[in-house]
Length: 82
Image 1 (tube, helix red, strand yellow):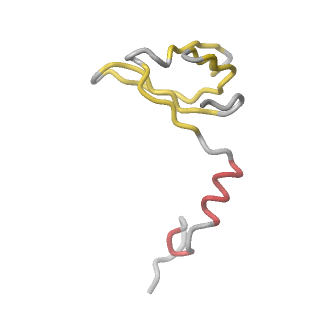
Image 2 (cartoon, one colour):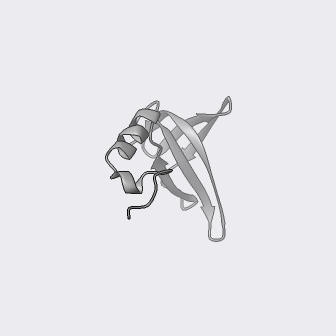
């Protein structure tokens, strides 16, 4: 489910009080997710109601591949088609 060494945007909270941050996955033993960010390790219980989501972040290479697949008119900085 989680890839060790990958960055994920982790969102936690309840109701209107949600927050998120990007962290690197160190270990995953369901339901516990161990991540590191800014030199600190944190363990999340992914089965907890306060664990909202984990969104895998693209690597630089994946981001470039994603943009390469777009038509020119959709790429940032390209003029609109006439």
